[in-house]
Image 1 (cartoon, rainbow, N blue to C red):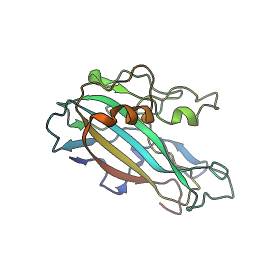
Image 2: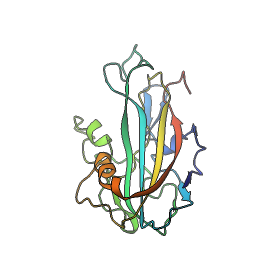
Image 3: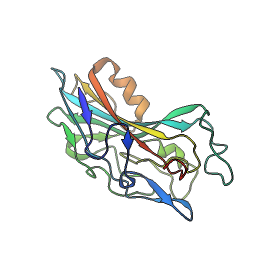
Image 4: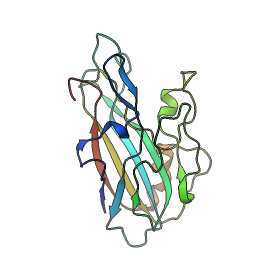
Length: 208
């Protein structure tokens, strides 16, 4: 399989319009347009009956002690964990492209509706669900795509991996509310092939 995006080059910078947060001179970060980027794929394995699209940030700090704290920095050598930004399942086998801004085009406080998505597809919850759990104005189930918003004081450039999985089933065997880990476990015996494209993003002026 091959996966690419017309919104950014592989291993290139993601534009702020596809991010949840953008740089702000006064407050470090402001809400951005939060559009989902364009994603397309080809060279699909024979027998493919549906696709799954998952986006993860592999550079999220494993501890939040220094995150977004004035006068401090998140050290680049701090161990990192994955953060799900997009979990899209039941993409029809006839689909080989997700247009930009088709699943998200603004920030939705308390999260977008789900799991039902366009054309019979379904969205899982992303990890902003847990991130905003303690924020009364923002907490909720964040279905679908919500873009990059790395710590503005992180000394490491963040990488966003958009992976497309080709499956031998039309529907992922999950019901109700589910997240990225649930999907990866459920599709493991059904994956015929996969490929990914990676973009980068930072809110740290020193790295921009």
